[in-house]
Amino acid sequence: MANVVNNVETLTQTKTVVKQKGKRIGILGGTFNPVHNGHLIVADQVLDQLGLDKVYLMPDANPPHVDRKFAIDAKDRVAMINCAIRDNPKFAIEMTEIMRGGVSYSYDTMKQLTQQHPENQYYFIIGGDMVAYLPKWHRIDELVKLVSFVGVKRDGYTPSSKYPVIWVDVPYIDISSSLIRSKLRQHQSIKYLVPASVERYIKENHLYEK
Image (tube, rainbow, N blue to C red):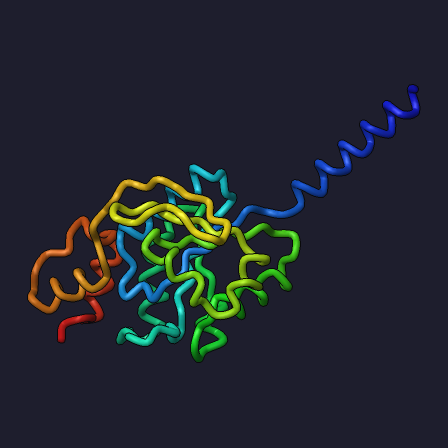
């Protein structure tokens, strides 16, 4: 019996070591044109509620949407993200899609990341309004095998899907990048809508003035 107990203890310790090897990583993708406080609140709340080790903000090169949005140069979007997250060690930037260029499909990106870091467990964060569109995502049936989807609850959207989704309650902050761009074109204040460092970067580089 002693041998059995010892074996069980050994197996338990081995499992613990393997479990601790990887990290629980959140991925928040988007154009971030520009990054704003709404993005950061979502990232922080998901990280806290799911006990993630880190959340990576992942800017895309070219979003694969029919209504493709105009985005400023990637270097400026990346610089603003770096400004926004530099005081939070739990946040980082994921450059895979920018470095690859072209149209950004989540499946291609997550396949690459899981191959590079097979020890990590990835949580792909999307807005509750985007959950309904999951059936239309590129290679979605394969993507759900690579990541756990996290849906941020939104008023007016039913938290349900035929795909497995972890639902998270996040305070609703009605801020959008398009709102910020509109205010800047009209020379209106964006104070408290974006981090102060992002506001400085926008003004110093004369972004979104036209």
